Image (cartoon, rainbow, N blue to C red):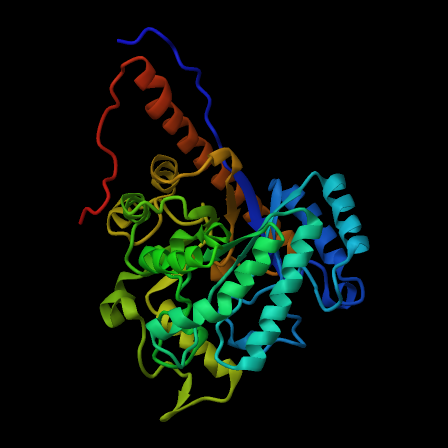
Length: 415
């Protein structure tokens, strides 16, 4: 046995929370004339719930968006309001609020379809994304979180070509500003009433690698990273450990650069009725053989997803080992262990962002939501600290002394 002891030095991740969790923390009549008040109040709220960072949600103002709120499954929040340019004066106000509350900024999130078919709509979204880039630089963060999207009129290979012509210029703008673009992998099945399921082409490791190779060809490989969300993997029948192992096997385990902490609980009855493709007909988003023109009907397109599952806010779903083995909910402890064991990350510099989209608990009332978010943040911190302790013991402290690790743990690619 080795005689030299290695110190026990666990590395927990940095906890953050997406501000879309409480869209109207600051009432619209107060925030519209004073937009940065919404950021100030969210920083204070984040301090109160025990989150040391926020992922600041940017979005088109409700008067400018092309997707009505009633057509959205999880409405976004424009906590960062960019109707007017975000200048140094506004940035100074935000920095003062961060200093006052002790809460920092993990990154800025703008989740939209950047490959939308309509040229004018796409230019409008890209111009807005550039404003998000500039605001992020002024606020001192080095990362943006968002989607790639999809042109519904094209098949996948055509979208790869469109990614090269339309998205690469965005990454070049990110590079010029010293930013990284972290892509969340949600397939966004309900973005269209058409029979399209993968509406964000960066939905899984295979596409990530294909997209990254295009980025490398254009000198922006370092700007393209993944903000991994296990809820979407569960939705597609995948498990985190196998996905991370695949990335490592292929030499791409550097791609994941941040995490959304949001689960998915699969409804076995829904899977029995529709399979993992979700409800394919008679959803309510069509009127006979034509799509409904009513935005409130279009939200039913999300039954492609909701017919078989429901989002989980971490800590609120029952511990279910059988569901973990069936890839029907997230095993958070193994998720955090697998990240440390298989990905090329420094956990102490990696953000773990709580994203709240559990429908029954999406309460837009500060007094009622505060203890729920506080409990979820506390659970997230505790489960990550447990994983950090296990990793340090099993991969550093014990090997240095020649002590074997007991058992096997979860294995990748096992079915």
